[in-house]
Amino acid sequence: MFITVTQSLMEGFGVSVQIFGLTLLFALPLGLVISFGSMSRFKVIKIPVKVFVWIIRGTPLMLQLIAIFYGPGIIGKWAQQIEARNFLTDFLSSWAVIDRFTAVIIAFIINYACYFSEIYRGGIESISRGQYEAGQVLGMTKPQIFFRIILLQVVKRIVPPMSNEIITLVKDTSLARTIAVYELIWNAQEFIKSKGLLWPLFYTAAFYLLFCGILTLLFNFIEKKLDYFKG
Amino acid sequence: MALLEVRGLCKSFGHTEVLRGIDLDLDCGEVMAILGSSGSGKTTLLRCLNFLEVADRGTISVGGEMLFDGSLPAERNLKEVRKKRLHFGLVFQSFNLFPQYNCLDNVTLALNLQKKQSPDEINDIGMKLLDRVGLADKVGSYPWQLSGGQQQRVAIARALALSPDVLCFDEPTSALDPELTGEVLKVIRGLKGKDNTMVVVTHEMEFARNVADKIVFMSDGVVEETGTPEEVFGNPKSPKTAAFLSKVIER
Ligand SMILES: Nc1ncnc2c1ncn2[C@@H]1O[C@H](COP(=O)(O)OP(=O)(O)OP(=O)(O)O)[C@@H](O)[C@H]1O
Ligand SMILES: [Mg+2]
Image (cartoon, rainbow over all chains, first blue to last red; front, top):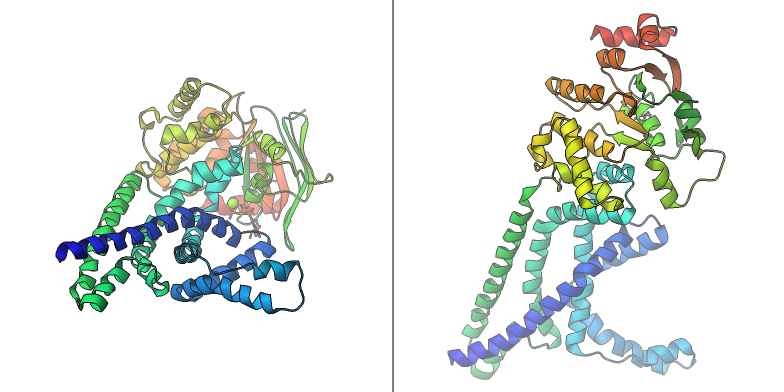
């Protein structure tokens, strides 16, 4: 029995790790783009981005998951019923329910990109103006200043808050079960329904703990690596 | 003709007029010390010279080349701005070394990015400059491992690396403990010569008197008085200069 349960949980864990990996892969760079938007000098960019970040950070991820999974289908149905046909209604009518896993990934990427963007913004804004000016008077270009001077200092400062957020992501992957994506907890709950076994649910903790433990070690390693300079 | 010529430079922040028509002339190889009480616009003047601020009116020229003319539309081409900026160097009050680079890399970063010389040549230049500011043994040290005085000397070497026509210092010793100011002033004094033209904003009166060729006293955004150290310290013409000098020399 233990082996059957372990195998099933491993499968679920695989899905959880996929959600985790894909979210990080896209949310880490997207967060940087969003943070640039929220620091833009142009109000037409800055205000919408800030409102968007506020909405995403101000509503539960579970709700966003449901909205992204059911939303397009509902909009599609609604558009099909509209009498006036034009480019827009035709376009909206073509919207259909998206694949469950895709919906999870999209919702997670958007949600985490917004959280990351705020961490990036905090890090970037904490670098003193003198660092930029020192680069400027040495004739450096803006990208040179950002990539050769600012970035590593920002990275050093944001490792602790980012590691927090990334460890939260590990556990948030369990929200995917709300739209029936068979991740770790879903698979464990199946044993309650089918066999009346409760212990597999608690057994999942071992998987989360192991994964978070490895991540903690990784982040400690990165912090150590960046210990050679202060600032 | 003077190497550096500034004419009628004006700069306002909102409704505060910080610079109200500054004229300066400085010959090649000369050292100019700028004195003045807090808020008189000294930092703003240096920032305008280095294009960290854009002046509203007036002109700046170096070696006969007009670098800034307030009557023309502002230069929008960033590449051009960077080229103009390279005529000047600036040493900041707060050093602003790059913390993630060691001393040598701080000095050579800009040269490495310009790629005009080979890495070996650039390393050589960096070593020579660090030697010149007395830090040959600190090449591999990171800024946090250095005292304030040593950090400022690295910052000076970094500014020299690009061989600017005019090197500006904004109160280079104000952030330092008193016992560390001497080593930095000594380095600046050692740079004096036909190769280095320098503008030094300072509150160190001894240094200004002994090292500068020209003293400029600024007050409320104008040059209140200018002359040789003997003239300005020995026999100030403006009552404001006299009041300022008697106050600082008392201390
Ligand atoms: N970016 C800015 N925005 C608004 N006001 C500014 C700005 N920079 C400087 N000022 C104002 O300009 C005036 C002159 O400032 P500046 O820093 O040039 O003086 P300073 O002579 O260098 O003084 P200190 O000896 O204290 O360094 C001050 O009143 C200051 O408040
Ligand atoms: Mg100042």
